[in-house]
Image: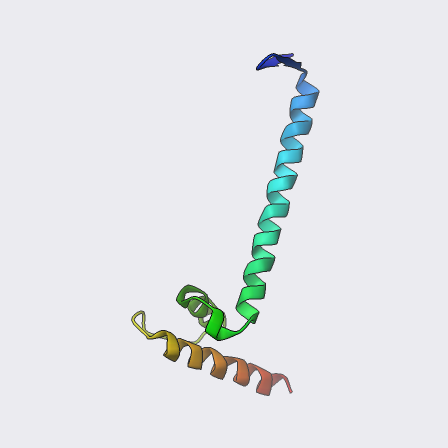
Amino acid sequence: MFVIGRSLINAEHVEDLERAEEESLFVEEKCREKEKRKKKMGETEDMTIHFLKEVLDEFNVTYRASEKKADLIAKVHQARANLHFRIT
């Protein structure tokens, strides 16, 4: 038995709470990853420079660290067009 505040909690209940917390964290992480993927597939003009660079990294496209956002957007458009061309 454990005392938390004014409540007595047995060890099994603590383990259940820990498992529930782990599951909750796992679900939250999956939601964050899904949202991130959704943003990467969205309109390039709405992306941050960080996301644009991540997309270019995924396409193995090189860019300069100091490259302007407009240039990164153009490269993402070109990389997506090249991917679409290779698939069809």
